[in-house]
View 1 (tube, rainbow, N blue to C red):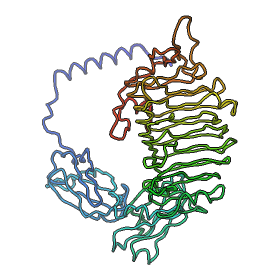
View 2 (cartoon, one colour):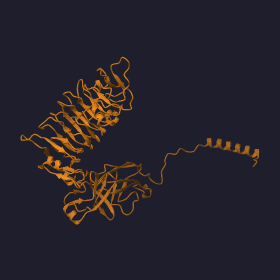
View 3 (cartoon, rainbow, N blue to C red):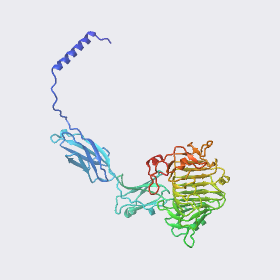
View 4 (cartoon, one colour):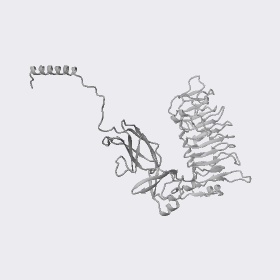
Length: 541
């Protein structure tokens, strides 16, 4: 399309002339500006929400003489039906009271013009939910079993309908309360899984709407199906001796003395079959006074007990292998082990080929090891030795070596693994003693990672057959160094100088860049250092 140049030029002149004319005749300054409607309140907020109340606030609207506040229950910004509460106020904040627990509420606020209702603002809107009630009691230990739980709530409360339990494994159990349950303010919920954490919620259901009246979390106990349940006063050592292979012995809270002598000093229980011995209630562990002797290829699991050798008739180790041969696994977990007058924790001075030895999540303390090393394998070995997430303090302080595994063991077990990770060692061993006196050679590689070693003069080892991935000793050098992080890494040594710079002949020193933070122990030797907790070094959760 073509345009006439003459007409374009004329149009430009006309526009210029119009602009000049308007500059000579400026518009009057606008001094008053009135909207047809008040602006809606802004920044509406709901705070201080409780089971039956909340506080609502907003910013003032210019020109408003008052505000109307309307509250709708079981509503999510739909504002259906009639409000359950209406307030007329002059300020910009108000409190809502007598609300219903665990309920969705919508609230809206309108600014009002005192002289002209047509100028009332549109509503500003907000949504909130009141808190759930807590009338559900925390279950006591005696209320919790392996597959059921007794749950109780405040007496006289009738507006209760259903209990809903959600397990840590994703399982959901719904239990509808009976008339008797409601009358007695308690219910027994069946169908749970053993050793599972559950969150129980108590609801009142009305017209299909659920409102939570309480919630509690608990963990079911070990499975009691087929278990031998032992109570205070029973002869635990006799039960162990007569149990069939594969038996689970479940201990009620009590103190059990193994084969006491005439003076009441504890003796040993003889383990001839593969057994599991565990406390029923994790927070009330049974105490076992005495020690264990393992025979005839047996295996043993100890869980959630306190094994106390302080009143033993002899100083023998807490676990002692008494016969040569092949043995099932030894697994000690979630226990407290103490033996202040004894030789140590485990003794294998026979040609025992053990499937595995595991210590996990234990607190081990005040085992002075007078006459033996702490973990003492002289003539046998484990195919897998695992030491993980344990807190160890005041152990082998006579001083003695901490982990001892002699070369004779590899004549019984040709190859194996040794894993020591995420433990806390404080005041262990002592001057001139070794943490890892392990002489099994290259077929037994050692992993030593994420451990804290503190307040000790112990050093790593001085044995060429301790397989930590150390560098070959340089010509003329008296010590060797670990520089590769393949087997040793991310450890923390505090006031433990010999772990990195021991000058003993043939000493092995950790040169992988270990840190040296103060663990800042509490009274139970739990680590409180933020640096170590963040790095997950030591026995930190």
